[in-house]
Length: 118
Image 1 (cartoon, rainbow, N blue to C red):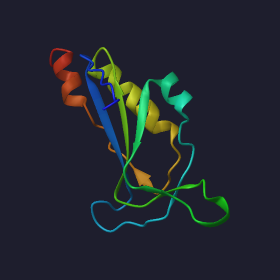
Image 2 (spheres, helix red, strand yellow):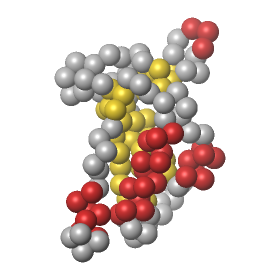
Image 3 (cartoon, one colour):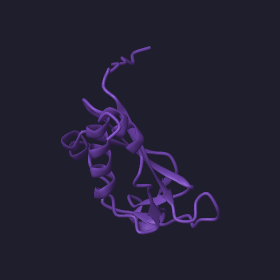
Image 4 (tube, rainbow, N blue to C red):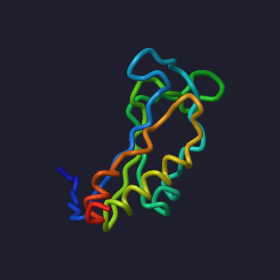
């Protein structure tokens, strides 16, 4: 009852980072490094939502590991779809996860419509 929502009129875009092999078989427990801090997210105007992650066990319990197929959702908004897309992919590109992937075509049809079909 204390949450306050702020609706934005600007378009938003989400790029999913998934485990290699998804939607088929994939390995769990692979390390995800260079996740942005809250400050880095604010500076880059994107947000990383965790869906299929967990913290490692043992001595380094701060290491983030993949624990599912659809693992991270990198989200951004902008004045245009193109701006949101650029911010989201900038966020994706900061993350070091050799055992994961993301599609690189998210939002391109919307960007083309925005540009008048060019």
